[in-house]
Length: 455
Image 1 (cartoon, rainbow, N blue to C red):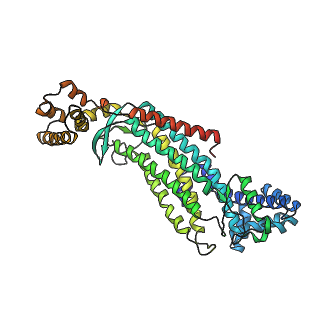
Image 2 (image 1 turned 90 degrees about the vertical axis):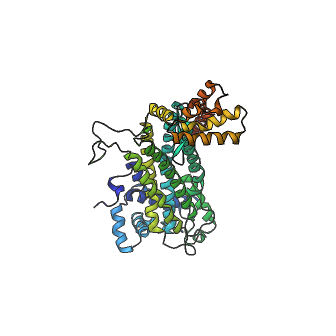
Image 3 (image 1 turned 120 degrees about the vertical axis):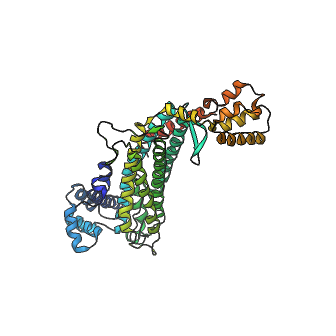
């Protein structure tokens, strides 16, 4: 019986596999093998036993069914794995799990999972950035209404709007790469973090395993990797999800029929917008991203609670992390891929952007203040003139341009200057340069990721 929507509706199989029951067992067994390798190399256990344990793990003969069968008796999932490995390793079984505790295995396995997931996360962000770069470049000089407080504001370009999104994703890429040094961390120091069972080789064993995995190690462990690290990871994920909801909320708003400046791709040959109203063309993908992003953000809170442990460790975090870490990873990958698809097939209605600018010419009020200022009118006085003109124009049912063309405040200003002040393309500031700068920076970030293999 399938209960979680992750089982039948959301998430990509390649990412779900990382967090599957079967793969988790492989990660945990690999942790045991690496610890044995380190201990054998450093003389903590006999070399023959180390090699035998590694060979046993790599035979892949320990199945999830066998472990579950043992767990019914032990009521301890890690001990069930240890028992299965001990039985399979023969004489070397005496040295399985030597000097370590369950959480050494759990947290090392988690680091391995997150490291594999990191490749997807970095690639997903870079893919979205590439799509946004193309939109920034294509529409860098395409004017549209700016909007603040839900009201019309001075004109911007659609490219600039996309540049804001692109720049934001670039910062997320930097955050992921920077924070990974803190959350891709293992711990191999036994029950209370002293490494006492392994003697003076304990730190060497831990460092050996970490270097083999290409991750860091806990500097001051308890029984666990200290959970501020996982909190940071989930906060980074939540930040990405927040941006994706922001981007897709903009799609949803600008797709409204009264605006109609951009919209999602809609398969007209077969897609259904509503079971009741056949005319509907709904932004369902963007709404889906918004919905799941809210869930992702909510998963940070349980981990914040789980970071508060009794003494060197309690078990109150265990069940929580079985949900929040896999769910956050699987779902953020899902919405990143979906958002990339939305923006790669986005319908951009430049004609409607022009129509809306022409229809709502009050958006050029700042441009008129600028014109008056250039003609020698003090800035604050110019602002008051245009404020009153805007009020009067609305009261009279006129456009701002109609009212201004008859206003004595503009009688001494050449008509062509007033005409130019109402042209959105003349009041876009350095939007084009901003777009160019953001594209350059984004390409540098993506290039560095490719060169370093996503860290």
